[in-house]
Amino acid sequence: MLEDQKISELIVKNYFEKLKVNLSLDVAIVGGGPSGLVAGYHLAKDGFKVALFETKLAPGGGMWGGGMMFNEIVVQKESLDVLKDFDVDIKDEGNGYFLIDSVQITSSLIYKSSKAGVKIFNLIKVVDVVLKDNSVCGVVINWTPVEYMSLHVDPLTVVSKKVLDATGHPAEIASILVKKANVKLNTPSGKIEGEKPMNAELGEMETVENTKEIFKNFYVSGMAANGVFGGFRMGPIFGGMLLSGYKSYKLIKEDLRKE
Ligand code: 48F
Image (cartoon, rainbow, N blue to C red; front, top):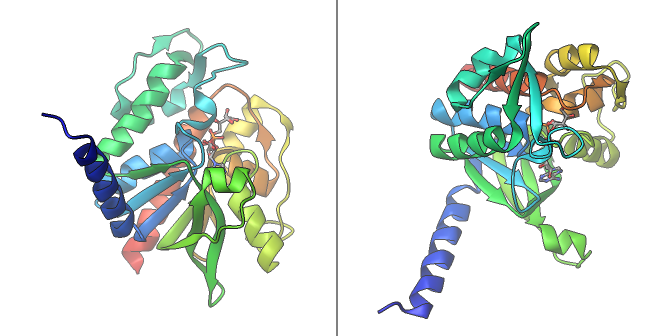
């Protein structure tokens, strides 16, 4: 016989165990778009303790919708190596352009990163960072509905050796850091430079170049990196996002191993 109470008990017990274990991390990833998911996948595969916080119900960020809701994405040949781990069908359209079903790749990134060991917490918004001795050492989280409804409810803290801002166009966490602590980032002006208009060629290059540690223990990837460094946007071509996620993984791994 199925007991209604037992079903609830199992969910509550397991969720709170998972949350408790993940209140202290090697890497906290903010945002479940393509760059955050690729970074998380590799970090978890290497044995680091990684959690990813996604404010929406479904992780995946801007990848589900392809271009203007046409659910196909374009990638360039430079990103094919990163795609090998994700087992997706890739259609060669010639001249270095490749096409992938956006639902297939997005679901694969989520599935594979979860299987690799990334603990994904959806419906949780990162609302602040923990700042101590001039370095970032954690994130501050709250339920998304609490934030949407502007309820006066205090958040909780997750400590983390490294934090990755993979929040896409708004570069939300870097913006919070500058706004609240007036810190100097590792950018030309020391502030958020602001995203430039569309230029796929430059945007794709820049998103990888701009993937960096911009403050002690605090990294940016994907469109957040271009937002912070003043790079161009690139629209529905996603190779740069995957490569940026991979670069952030390598940077964070090297820094964690040095410590
Ligand atoms: O925007 P998003 O997909 O990030 P990305 O990895 O990729 C960008 C592309 O999708 C696209 C593009 C490339 O052609 O221009 O835009 O840089 O995913 C960012 C995720 O972060 C979540 C947000 O809901 C989205 O799923 N997010 C944003 N702010 C927060 C957050 C926050 N404060 N806390 C938790 N999640």
